[in-house]
Image 1 (tube, one colour):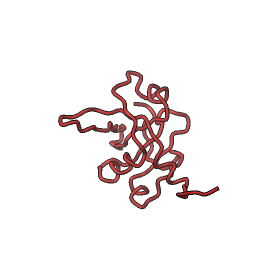
Image 2 (cartoon, one colour):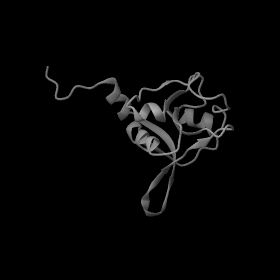
Image 3 (cartoon, one colour):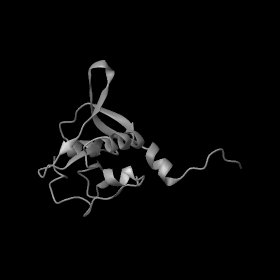
Length: 122
């Protein structure tokens, strides 16, 4: 068996598609939704499934799929603090902007990576 390209976990994670809330702007530009918790912490929420999105935002909204690599690019150039994957789940995961800027894009458990807040409640 031959391989044309060697894949790493980092490659797979970057290519994974996540569901996100979006808005269409004039000129066809797409905007990613972000949220701010009670402490002013700003983050991009992304979701592995529609059910995970509806747990966090029961009213739903306009959605789209985005590869993690695209969301990370926006994160690095934005004032957002992090990407939070499935924020309303029992085990949300996070990618901090500071980590992403240094090439560390593997999501880690939310745990103590963020300041205390109600980030899991919209």
